[in-house]
Each structure stands twice: as structure tokens, then as C-alpha cells.
Length: 261
Image 1 (cartoon, helix red, strand yellow):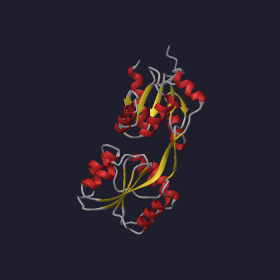
Image 2 (image 1 turned 30 degrees about the horizontal axis):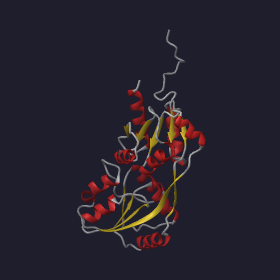
Image 3 (image 1 turned 30 degrees about the vertical axis):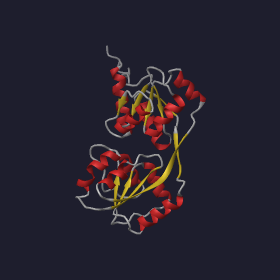
Image 4 (image 1 turned 90 degrees about the horizontal axis):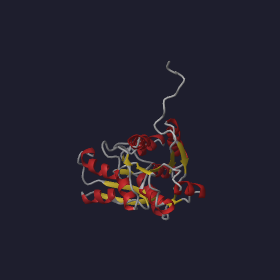
């Protein structure tokens, strides 16, 4: 007789997974992990601080509001927070490019429109690859790029290389956040089965604060660039998400967990 009350095992039953960001993103990821049977451990490894050059940022945003730029590029949801906190105005004649769906969603939620999101690779590299076709070959364009202090200038340099007039401005700084002694001990003892890595700066903090990770602790990265950064910091990457989304990141973990059964 079939026991219809018995529940099918979930793909991550028994897994403890380190979630390296807090806030709404971390809460959402934790909820999705629990739905798959995992026990999430939220331990923010990075935080964001105002730029050291507030005057330059304010000047750039004033020029943006005045219509001085043809395009604005936004490379993270944190940059959207900066725009919102400064009550930045984006004129209707200024187009907006987001590096990925998460950033685009943050822009929309904040009341800004989005004109370009890469179709294939949700990253600065992907945006650069699709730029000319997406902008109908308009040339040269005056572009404002807002970025983190530690972000690689891939997009700015790429746009300059093809002849556009680019002003690159630091919108915020990324700083490390010390994790608790309990989290450090749990990772060192192998009680954390997997670590999610959402950016190069998170990868750096994983290695600095928690490395070297024990044999068997999975490292799952949100995209190819993050995976490259993680390897550069000395982490062994076990799985890479197909898309730069939280859902794809968890899917990559599930696939890797299934492969170990």
C-alpha cells in the first residue's frame, strides 16, 4: 500500500548552505533553499559604503539630470540604490543600459526605465558585446558609467575602445564584513556543505576569512566572471550558474548535489 502522507525527499535535504548576502536578496535565497530542503546560513561577507569622492558623483548626477549624456550604464542593484538615495533624475532622452535582469528589475522597481539588457551574458562583458547592435550603431555616444570602486573597468574601456565618450564615476565602495566565530568554525569543521559566491568581492572575502575551505565544501558561483574571479583568489569552483540570477545559482547547486548522489 502506498503511503500518500510520505513526502518525497527534497534535493538539498540535510545540506547547510552559506548565503553571503543579507537583506531582501539573502532572505529570498534562504527561503528558496529551505523549500528544497537545505538549512541556509545567512552570513553577509560584504557591505557597501558611500564613495570617497561624493563631489564627483554629485556633479555627474547633476549633469545626467541636465541631459548631458546619451546613455547611462548601471552594473548592479547597489548602483540603483545610489541613484534612488540621491533622487537622481534620468531625462527621457537619456537611455539606460543594465548589465542583467537583476539590475534591470531593481531599476524598474525604483521607477527608472531600462532600454537594454544583454540577452545572452548578463554581465559587463555581455553588455559590451551587444552594445553596437542594441544602439543601432549610433556613434559616438556620450556615456556615463556608474560603478563600484573595485569594479574592473571592462565596460568603460571597451566603450572607449570603440570610440565612445565615456565618463566613469565611482558610485560606492565595497567593504568586507567579518563573519561570526560560529560561522568560521562551522566552515572549518565541514558543517557547511556549500558556499554561494555572488561576486568577485565575495570570493575574496570567502578566501580571506574562511579559506582554505575544507575538502568537500562546494563553491557555487553566480556566473562565469565570478567563477574566474573566485579561481584567481584561490577557490576551487565546483559549479557555475547558467544565468546571473538567484534561481539559476540555486539550480546549479542542486545539479551539483545530484551529481554527488
